Amino acid sequence: MRPDGISNTNGSSHALNGSAASPSQKAAFSHTLNGQGAFAASNRGIRTNGSQKASVSPPSYFGHDREEVTRILIQSLFELGYDGAATLLSKESGYQLESPAVATFRNAVLEGRWTEAEHILVQSFYPDGVGRGGNSADQATNKEKLVLVDHAQKNEMLFYLRQQKFLELLEARDLAAALIVLRHELTPLNYDIGRLHALSSLLMCPPEHLHDQAGWDGPISSSRERLLSELSRSISPSVMIPDNRLAILLDHVKHNQINQCLYHNTASPPSLYSDHMCDRKDFPLRTSIELSQHSDEVWWCQFSNDGTKLVTASKDQSVIIYDTSTFAVLQRLLGHDDGVAQCSWSPDDSKIITCSQDKTARVWSVETGRCLLTINQHRHPVTAAAWAPDGESFVTGALDVNAQLCHWGMRGQTLYVWPDGFRVQDCAITPDGRRLIAADLDQKVHVYNFATREEEYCLALKSKPTSVAVSRDSRHMLINSADGQIQLVDINSTDVVRRFSGQKQGHFVIRSVFGGAAENFIVSGSEDSRVYIFHKEAGTLVEALEGHIRGCVNSMSWNPRDPGMFASAGDDCLVRIWTRERDVRPSVAAGKHRAVPSGGFTRTSALRSTSSFN
Image (cartoon, rainbow, N blue to C red):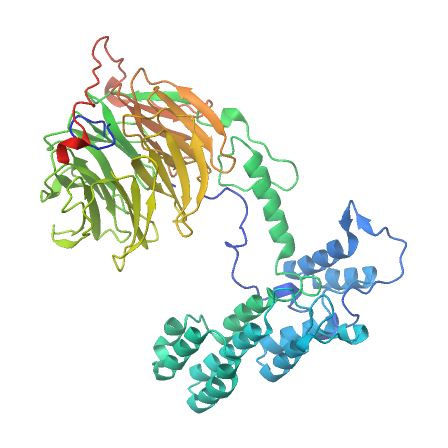
């Protein structure tokens, strides 16, 4: 399919490795933060942090600092609920998890003793022994104080403490006391004036809206734990070990092993008992089924969100829906008058949008195969569609310069038309519903706030983008370009995380997607009739698979529920289902295995160019 998506062109998915919960995935707070639980402050304060009883034990543990290892083990035992074992290890080793100052500060914050917490914070010092005001503090005295990291800002920490105090007073509806805190404690800090104004506005906020307006989770216990977690970032880890430190370290180990495993394709985390390596035989590298229902180039394939169905679209104007358990045809959608370039499943898989060169988009019932809605307001080919996460509206992209990106309701009513006047090659809405992404024919990718409809930024590329796909976590987008390069872009920062090359692309539309159980692969078609699979983290080529007879491999889709299956659609009129070597797949219903007849293949996708619309 040509990059312009015009008539007679062959006409998108998603990235976390399958390790145990990462720091971002773990609960924001634990009721056993840094070992808190049955082990109270009095238990921790027996000995100043880092003190050690006389011992003949070597100073290191297989190259690691013995004190660090022991204290992390003590913390982990508390977190696992083995308080007695943790206390015994502390006594046996002579190492304490925290100093008295840290334990007192922790309890002061969690119990809302704000004056005491502030006093400890004001008396804290930095690793070089310099305290507040730049005066060197006595080393012996320092042992009873908090140690901050070099970049810590005491004013910021005080602001967070007083903000918590202010919000709790608001929640208790003690507005007079809250106003005093705002005027005489928060304002004099002269920190984050914008936030200070926002806090001021909360005085008039109804109680039921306080949490949302303040961005404050409440109730008091959980919000104090969040506060302590935030403050701990500014406290030296030598005296206050970050929460769940051993779990985080083990998670890093798992991620590292997964990233080094070329064929890792399971959502199950690797075991800690042995080094991890997946067998190539467990990776989908063979074609188990050829689907030959189409009579012309197949431009699109996509598994449903639940993985039970597969839709394919072709230049032959038809759309076919298959049951992935047997690959029997469930529906054959007919009604378009030209090739169908793209399809989009609704979030609940009950409906599907088809986008055609005949300048229309149609919404179909998957169960009945009946056309529910036809969008015929576009004046040029419709190239792409994307559903809003609630399934109540959708966006179409087209080559119209006046109605290139439109938001539609389910009755066909126009909700909004973006006014920028470019031609859309592809579009996608992030799964979290926050952003709409559109790739145009002027070598740009536009990113909009889907709620406000305002453009957040525009990426300038060196070549025309032919497709855009978004990861399941809404963090990354994958951009295919006509110069044969695939870019992985961080949606929030706009940074190019990684580039992939090797597949052949120059004249036709190729749609790359995320693949694998944890989306740790990038899979792409190619103009050399091959399927290319890249390792997302390493950026390396994993496999270049042969199978399609000739022409371009246009579209790819990885089954979101079966990591051992993906599909490819090509100009050879075939859809190939790729599975593991050990998998046995059923025969296609009605015996629809067929070879492409000799001489029956014709490439007509280069007849028109974008100059037709200039």
